[in-house]
Length: 264
Image (cartoon, rainbow, N blue to C red):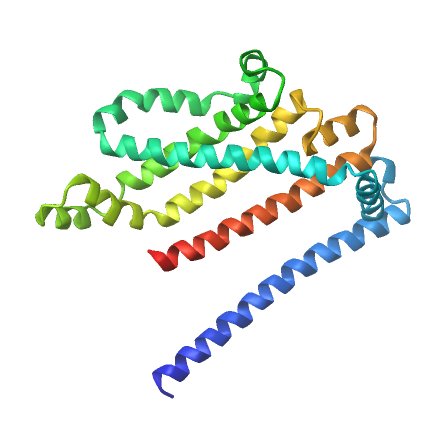
């Protein structure tokens, strides 16, 4: 068997493994939904407290018929995209500045550590006073939660880049910008992608917390309103819609990751 045949065999096995993983993931979800519905139908669990897949579907249909479904999804999605984009750009840019200037890094290090350890949710009332009870405070809340962790994780990746590669470029009299673009960034694609995944989850937390506090629209508002009127179906529907939204954005990041790896 030649090298080409071996490669083809490897690709087929890799594809088959991927199909098996996806099939198992879907199967687990289907089994969970079936068991959930059966337990609800048999009265083993209280459908008023735990809802059921059928009740969730009925709630989604009602929201769709009342033209509220896509409005709430869009409001939350818009806030997440704005917060995520700004947080990612700020986080990577500030991490680059900290790598560029060791002096600035040493000065800001304790402040970043303190800000990262602060419970950002407790700052909610202050944020509302500063930015107002509107979308601005939601975005600001999400930025406070997500940006600091992005700065720290990306900066740690930058400073732990292979020293030999950096020395090699320095021996060819490369300047700092060339070192950053030719070594630091390409070497940390995986780190940046990982930090973006964390940033996404933190952004979701920030946006939903902000919506719980001030919003009159969005999935966080649906969850909050459902809890206030004891409508468990609405609460669980909001959570499931958030899960679907998270999954879509997560797979979008995975797609970007594949494209970046090909480029770099």
